[in-house]
Image (cartoon, rainbow, N blue to C red):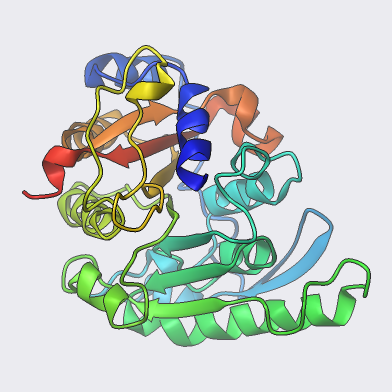
Amino acid sequence: MASHKVQSFVAMLDKEIGDVDEETYDLFSSPSRLQDLGMVDPTASSIDLTVHDRDLTIRQSPGLLQSRRNEGTTGAVLWRTTVAVAEWMARPENILFTSGVMGPDRSMLELGSGVAGLLAQVLAPRLRTFIATDQPHVLKMLRANIQSGKSVVDHNKSKASSRRSGEQDVRILSLDWEEDDARRQLRSHGLRDGVDALVACDCVFNDALIEPFVQTCVDICTLRRRDNDDNNINDHDVNDRPSGDSSSGAPPTLCIIAQHLRHADVFEQWLSRFIRDFHVWRLPDSWLGPTLQAGGEFVVHMGMLRKSSLNA
């Protein structure tokens, strides 16, 4: 049943992306509307915001952002892409949930959650399991933000709308794309069958990270797609869509990549690499929330792993 929902969802998408140059030109041909790097407020130690009627306070680390440590520092603050994606996914009419590919029996893993953990706080009530991941040095503040958000939910929720006590399952895992074996890390934390969706917000900003980022996406998706067929995914023929894993009946992992459109060359390098291992579609603007649509600053792509990548 879950695999059929994924097939139906993919059938609603526009034509699969086949020309990297054409996609890049289409997205970057208009004048750039990017006024800054895309951080909400890089100098604030905390940020108050409301996401779909939920009031949240996000702690940040401006000091870590300005530090020169070898590990990444961009996750020390909240980025506008993450806020836009959180607002989109929190909406009741979000296509991922209304189509049934996401829901209370589904799992989602985020790459590069940063210290904010905003998606974990917003989406955990709508999912069976949410896994927030990042490098070890940001996990302490990430955990504190997620715990603070859960306390707000517990305090504000009504009996009529609350889920059963303890049903929210939020896991926080250390995952360094350049250093860690993603499959081993997930298996060691009870996720040997993978996840239903992988999401990444504004993780493609440095060409040096493209290869480890995409390979991490591949490694995570192979846990779910081990035995799937790589059918010809074209022309909206639902019978040509990949089915679920034949050994478990689970659908393939959806890989959802949201980006702030900055540099055409970095985007082109990422898409050229990503499309080698994934069938790729751009989600239509009509599916996105008003924040993601506003100004043409953001784009959301979805990938499904090719069978040729399973045994590479």
